[in-house]
Length: 287
Length: 256
Image (tube, rainbow over all chains, first blue to last red; front, side, top):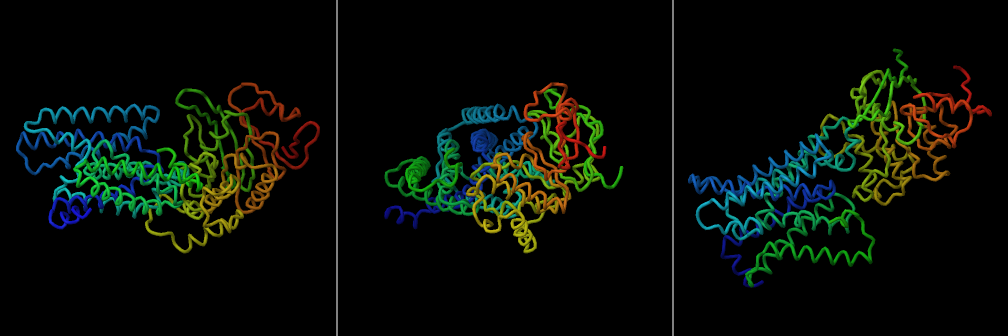
């Protein structure tokens, strides 16, 4: 801990990591609550795996055609939004085949990513950091982009809070009120896509879904209002990512994995504790 | 058509995408001020009828008019109460939040609900007897209370027509009678149509009973006796007056 604090003052990449952890937790706490309430964790997982395609493609073109401005995260944003809209439109149009399409996108996105990374000249260590995250590699430029996406997510959530809540609670009723249910559903998926991009830089593609849903699962055991669950999830997210960073620092462990193990253990602990206290949310049991 | 028309079905047929006909050639006209109960066998198209009136489904052929216009144009004046059992029982919202969702419309507004809307929500809660539960969690309510909260939510749109889908499905007999008393009071302000699976028990407070049945499939009518009802089940839709005058022959329609 003391070594971490000492380095934190001196090393900019560590400061970037701490900031990235905090920013990412804000978005994932808010959007994760929607994802759990609307039961679209599977869609969120598919979007995050699709991102590998965008990351791989952006990096390939950046290296091969010497486009230094083309950062992998740009590819990630475009792929995530495209995947979210594709899944959203298909699930609105043809409900019965929704899960097949989601699975297909999930796998094809990853396959495309693997091919691009394989064909990219040079050292291919990046694949591991995309899959499992490397918060220590977050640059100033990444941080700026993470901050912008964070602000977009917060503003959209504040503006559409009542509407998105009503649509999550009772879509059919919202439809009878003439609300643009499809618009709010696609909005929610796009928010999810942006949050997933942020979270990938912290815990990587594979573990995104844990950081989206575990804090919410824990928080919904103790709080019974949506905004309280969001606030508590943000707090828990900050705690898990920073604790993961600190614990992993000295023994040089992968911080994303430590973060997720911490979150998982805390969730298990609350499950045991809930024998004392009646669980407030059944959602928590679904994770 | 007359301006007193509440709901008008003209030669309405409806089939789902798999081609199964749910409703065939329905003709029905109901006047304003009605308190009608839609009954019929399971899968007979009761809920489909409701969804056609809400504009959630479009008829395969024929026209549906509600409050003198197309359902989609008139839905601001239609209050809809779904079955509470369809919901995520643990959704983390307060009862007041649920009721306030009734304010939302096509027109977008953002920010907090206005003091007027809050006052109206409190009034709606008082109307359904949930005044003291406004700040409780929706998840903590009993089944009957949840149903009442959803009715309060529907009242937020100042409905001219309240449509309810099996409002007494999980309520005991005593509670059911309380619900009907409440509906009866509300019926002085607006028209009510409700779906009920309960053929055997239709409260005397209900003014009309509408029986819906899809094709010519014959169902044994054990709960109902009387030739009139037997005959009624041979038709697609039928409306009978319910004037507390049931004879041995079944329901008598005094003026038709």
